[in-house]
Length: 413
Image 1: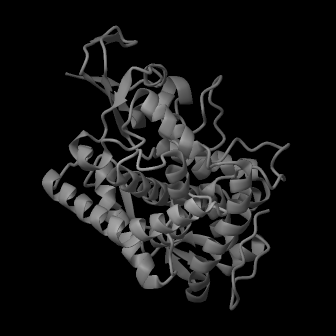
Image 2: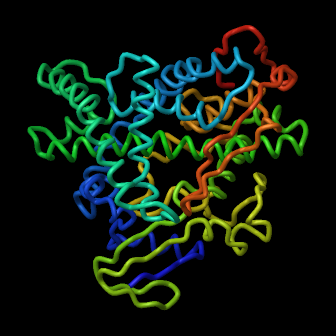
C-alpha cells in the first residue's frame, strides 16, 4: 500500500523516522541496492560517515580556491570567445570536470574523454527518473543504466582504483577523493568490487547531473528576476548572502527530486492519523510540500528570494531531504548559510552552485530571447534540456568585468 504526504511539517517529521528505508530506486536495485543512498541502519551510517570524512575544511578550501576556478576557466573561455552559449551544456561540462576529480577518476583531460563521461552520466541518469516515467520503457531505461555501468567500470573505475590501491599499499600521500576514502575505509575487499564501482558511479551521477539541472533552474529564475528588477545583478555580485537567498529560493521551487519514496520497516503512525504497515511505501511530494502556503506564504508558488520562512524552516525547503537519507553532498552543492561574519572568509563553504552562478552573472550572461528554454516533460521531474544565453558587454561592465577578446579568470568576491 502507498501513503502520500504533501504537507511540509508532516513530510519533514516523517522523513526523520529512522525506521524508514529508501524506496526511490526499487526499479533499479541492480544498480542502487547496496549503495549509500539505499542502505539502512548501521551499514548506511558507516558509509555516510566514510564519505563525510572527505569533506573537511582543507578539502573545501582547496576545492573553492583552486579546483573549481580552474575548471570554470576552462569551460568559460570558449563561451567568452563566442559571446553566447547554453547553460545546460556549460553546466554539464563544468560539473563533469569537477565531479570526476572529486570522485577520483584519473583523466587525460581531452574533449573526447569528457564527452565519454558525459555519455556515461546520461546513461546512469535514468535511475533518477525510472520511478517517475510518464512515457517510455522501464526495461529500456535499465538497459541504458547497465551499459553505462559497464563502460564506467572498465574504462574509468578500474584503472583509477588500481592506482589508488597501490598508493595505499605503499603508504604514500593519498588523493582526496571518494574512491580513495572508500578504499581506505573498506580495505581488503570488505565491500564487493561491484558495490565499490556503483558507489563511485552514483557519486559521479548525483554530483554532476543533479547539480547541472538545478543550475539551469537557478539561472532561469535569477535572470528572469534581474530582467524585471534592474540593478539586482550588481547587488547579487556584491552581496554573497543575497545571492545565496536567490539560489536557495530557486532550489525550493525546483527540488532535485520532486517525489521521494520510503518503505516502512515496521508498523508506524503518520501525522495525518494514517496507519502504515511494514512494507508499505510512503510517497513524499517534495514539490507540493515546498510550496505549502501555510509555510512559505500566499505566494509560495512564485519566485520570491526575499521571503523569510518561519522559525527553523530551511530556505530551500525539503529539497535536500531530511533525516537519515538527507543528501550527503548538500554542503558541496549549496554551501553553508552565508552571513556578514563569514562572507569574506576563504574557508566558508559557498558551494558549487553559488560559485558558478556568481561567475556567470559576472560575465554578463543574459537569457537569449530569440531562443527560449527547452524543457523535457517526459517525467514528473522536469528537466531543462537547453537554456541558451548571450553575453551582454554592458552587463559585464556594470559588474566591473571586461569580457571582449580576453580570457575569463574566475574570481570570487
